[in-house]
Image 1 (cartoon, one colour):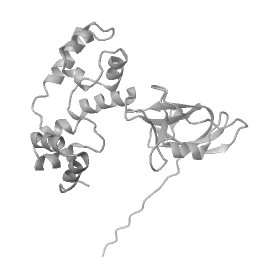
Image 2 (cartoon, helix red, strand yellow):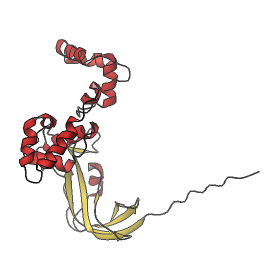
Image 3 (cartoon, helix red, strand yellow):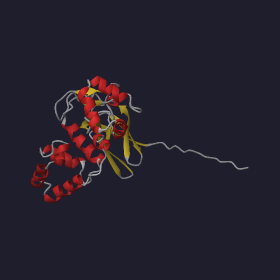
Length: 251
């Protein structure tokens, strides 16, 4: 008779105390606003930590961080730090969350649960850049990073996904500082090598709300592209949606 003894060991996280210097706000590719706490440097195994994401609006409100607050920083997952709690409050007032998007000056709004904050502008540069990045990633276009997209967008060279398929885009890219002929040629080859794609892969890569590749695949099992356009053109939006909802796997 044998016994199988298994023991799960759980070690406590390493912690250090630091002091809050400020909070910065980053706008992601979906328009989501993420607060990032900036604190005096702490070191874990030679890795210097100076900032940490607070993840979402709800936790930011719970922490009520102020400049000068002493906080407990935990070292997790070998490289990531985590702001666990405030150990001592300063006399400074809490840092306020953004009210306006720093990129387009539109109002910041919350999702239904009140947990996440987003830029309310559907045409915010962050969302346009995000759609281009999502398209390139889903379509398997190599050699283009979010940083490159941001630079091209901010220079007014890349305005949308469709820019990638226009001859004039590559002509302007060749002349743009920091890019040149080689970069433009490499990107053009990567874009136009993507020739064998299904219809659902293409439409499912356009970042339409609530529309993934899997969703489009279910729709195209029922209707082809021409039938979809015909349904959308001849029926009211509500009736069109009802037709789609009847497809198995779509709510």
